Image (cartoon, rainbow, N blue to C red; front, side, top):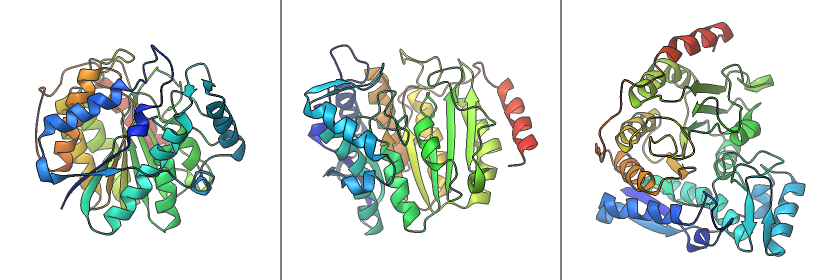
Length: 336
């Protein structure tokens, strides 16, 4: 069995504006990464299908959906200070949100070991009631909600440089979805402190690991093994979804972290070991340097195929190692 690569050309037609960083060329770079990976018959390409709006309503408010449809029907426009739509954006958003549901069906039928959803607009900043941060609908949350409704225990790992505030918002009180975010702090959207750990029945199923500018791959791996893994082992997930933002790459123009594509390969390889093959999904999120997107996509696809590849060498020795003890002490205080 191989890897599903799920996309749709409508995702190219979401065009926020001329110089917007979340531009169609990003998806072209991801396809270049697929080509660079040279995986032949290991990859099965599927055309993503639009999600039913009733599924979206399990995550988002009706008012938000109505507003997005209205803006798109008017030919596009401003959603918030950072987020814009074109006339095709609503259709693209429905397809992006539907890709994960299609992936679940295929994986449950045993046709592949994992799926890479190469879709845009991204989703992890979209909260229950608000589209923001280049995101319209929360693609990962729609997928996780379906699995959650089927009785699964879902692990969401978000290694986008920006905190996945929207995904956290959706599952903040849910004991059956463990959300782990490794992100730069300080950085938009200015959320994701360690003491944001859930509410009600969901206390302890949100784990935020804020990292300082300059943090390198060795620190990411240490944080993963020493802070995240013990909590994951206690949670015992049955499915994994990765919010794969490639803007923690050192080339990214919007962030200040120090990863390379080699780090993405190694980190992803470690993350996918938390659940069995056939229960692993990856969603494209951020990443705004085209070369970094290409190399990192290649690296992650190789990780899904259990191949170690380093288009760039691993990073180490950067700022950030001193943060591990600080975060660990806070976690001990909160008794995760």
